[in-house]
Length: 187
Image 1 (cartoon, helix red, strand yellow):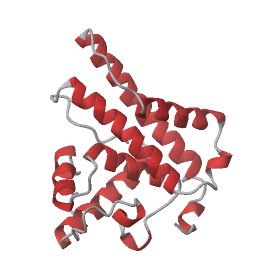
Image 2 (cartoon, rainbow, N blue to C red; image 1 turned 135 degrees about the vertical axis):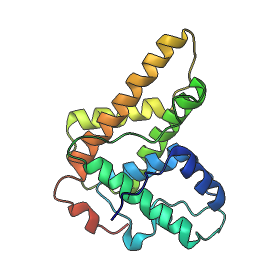
Image 3 (cartoon, one colour; image 1 turned 180 degrees about the horizontal axis):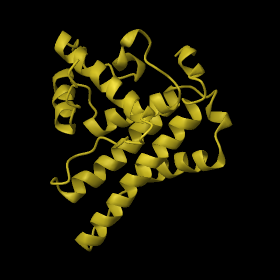
Image 4 (spheres, rainbow, N blue to C red; image 1 turned 120 degrees about the vertical axis):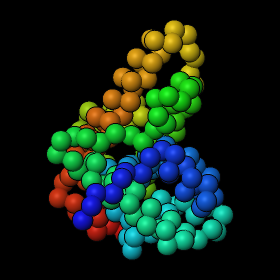
């Protein structure tokens, strides 16, 4: 079976526009990653209902549904990757710094929302480090950005993106990695 090209930020944005979801690609990706990292899986394959993203009653076409299923597989596989290849889905590096920084905040907002939707059973057992990651994601989600030196700002954004990557993997390992018992919960 040939490998499917991963969905890009632009691919996901186009899908969101078609489905009129009212979020952007980074926030949707963050929501799904947070949901999976919290130990949950969409029941019956209905990703939008699981994430409580119903949009304006635009039903996904079969092609759009296939893209949503691809996104789910892509996120699940990346979070479980033993090579730690997970990356938050953010705008390409050629996009303006302000747009990419805002996407980081939106990804964090989405992640926190998805993590909360996953349930609280495993959350009470999180390590101090994992709880600190959640708090830091909250700080990033609520941030507004001031830009000064372009090189320093670029370096800082790269560091924040690496923190998101490692933090999401830690939360996934602690919550979802505990035998996947969270996937049996009612949502």
